[in-house]
Image 1 (cartoon, rainbow, N blue to C red):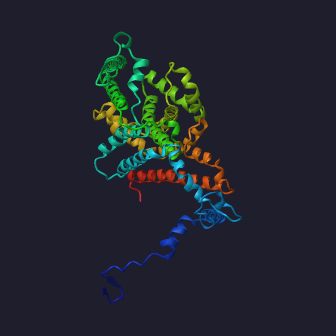
Image 2 (tube, helix red, strand yellow; image 1 turned 180 degrees about the vertical axis):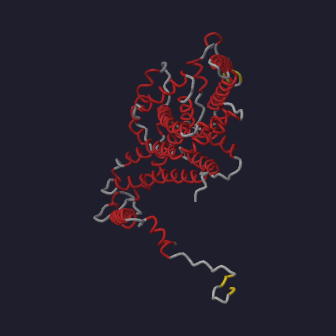
Length: 458
């Protein structure tokens, strides 16, 4: 509809329907023009990439799937001129690759740990899942204790070990048990906690900090450790399984999860300590970070495994896997501290001034304003450190701890499965497993980045 005048001009009363965009700018063709062929250089890179893909993918697929052997009882099934991957080898060694030499009759215990970890982790990763605080408490506090009891069997009599080597009033009072509980040990423990609270609270108060807050935090630490020791002393009726019998993916996940969970809070504390205005705290944090960053992880594992027992009291010989866990956690915390420090330095001074202007304390400012922004900025660096730590767990084989890759290498020595393709099959399977874990962490980090992106860019 339009209004026409005598001179031939007219006024249109309705807008013309917009024409569809050119086919070359939308759909698959438009995406390819924008991302693959947007210029001469990008076109060359795309063609080179396609050439490499065509060169690598067909023989890889043929080896892993087309020419692969899927059934067999021994090496005879994997012999031949055109035989691909020997998957019966993986099937035969699958139990060892997952559990190591964990007793077969007790493998239900690692299965329960795996299932409980997955059940608690999935709701923690879903942002819209309710009851996040309860879920976090169960995953980070309750789950490690339950996992330790299930995997080891519990009943390690930790109080007796601590009382024998570090008891303060043992020589004066002696032992006294009530209902199987060493009463003297717990009196000794309470006395030690009170002395530590007084000393730490006094030191923090002397340098201008909140002495009562420091003493209360020390008390909570002693309470948590005391509950942990009490749990270790309970006999749950499970047979004890030495960590030397652990192996495979079980050990890999134990080391990786422990290192990841422990390194992040330690790294945050070290980063805050390095930026502290208190000279002693800053000096200690810098010394710790630079020392651990200047030593290779292999050296840390060697020291923790073979040299650390020489510096401990006679009879005090912590478990080998525990020493490796502590070494890995401290090593990763030093690198994590530098990643977090980079995020803290990226926060403008106005954020600190604004937080102080509204009357927030230092702890409130860091917890509510600074750290959330800093950690959001360095999510790629944090996840990169996690992925690197997950892959670095293979180094524990150097100190005779058989992780997933170490268990796989040990499986190659079985003469019943010695064939020309066994080695390639094993490493291909290991590559797939490591890729799935690392790729999963990478994709989840991208999801978190997109969710926390507040720039509103399209």
